[in-house]
Image (cartoon, rainbow, N blue to C red; front, top):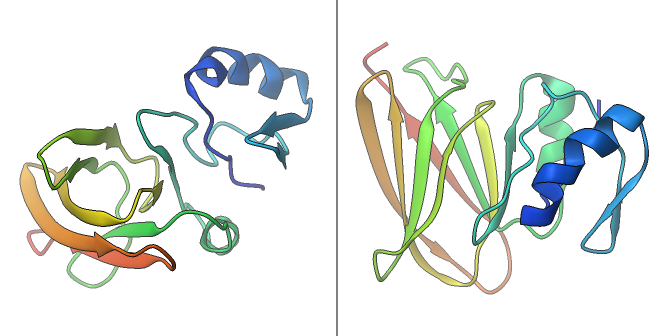
Length: 148
């Protein structure tokens, strides 16, 4: 299974049709093979992102995607991956750039360099982390819930 690459707003309406037809999409100059809906989330806001990571193969493909400089992972007290967390990303000025519910335990986001706040809620418990995104490279944040 191939992960989905995130598209811009126009693609939100078109993507299901393209995926259903089994065609090849081109997003931001990259060829994207269609996948089953359960693989990852196709969406967009003011930033490009994708969520997924349900299974070892999917996590390996997601981890290898270039251009995403933030990897946030959701986990329980023993390191088990959690899906379904609601995640918000805000910039240093408090502007909300992303507000989504994760389809899997991993969230990849493409952000401009700067300082961001990652806020996540799972089963009524909230976790907040701050992260500095550099001009090059990828930052990783683990959001861990101990109450499970």
